[in-house]
Length: 115
Picture 1 (tube, rainbow, N blue to C red):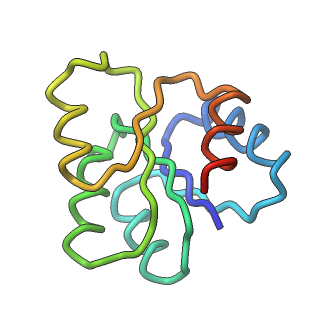
Picture 2 (tube, rainbow, N blue to C red; picture 1 turned 90 degrees about the horizontal axis):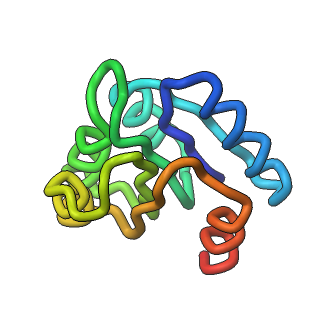
């Protein structure tokens, strides 16, 4: 199962369309609170987490998950430059990978091909 943590409807639609090719069950959360609730109520193998959310940050999701020992692989989706301190903070907070937006079919093949 894959959890998408994203608050932009166009990005949600684009990502869900790409993920559908892999025949995985996908949940969506638009806020860090919704994401934590989902992660605690279901077993997600992967969470694709946008760093910039209107009601918080993807970093909040990573920190909350880290503090509750949730066993999910976190992949951060971002438009932030690779050398940003936020990227280092995301990796330090439990992100396994950082993927620059927009998420492409190549990204998805790499993500689902390595997990």
